[in-house]
Length: 144
Image (tube, rainbow, N blue to C red; front, side, top):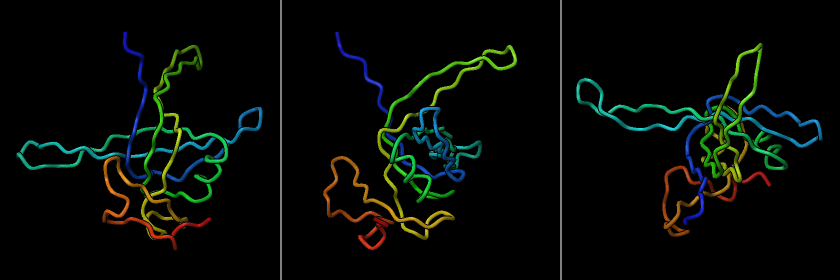
């Protein structure tokens, strides 16, 4: 019998500024909202982007870095897992699926998005380290 796999990899843009809070135990948690475009044909047969929106939670030191360096519009790569949760509010059962990030790569450069903050280089699997990718940050873009 095969083992279960719960893995998500997304590359998209932040739809709003990150929100940092702390758990009761003091662990930093950063909430991100990203949009990932898919392509489909519209009624006239033309290709059009269809956005998909995802909620992402980042924990620990990485959460603090996300809150400090990311801003609305900034491209990011997320590697994580899906997490389903349920709760009750005002007597109504609610549920949601979100992504819990294991890693967040900052893409683009300081000019991307509305905020400042540099980026780490993200190279897709199977690509060579020296490959040319539009918007790939340089060492000057990394803030630390």
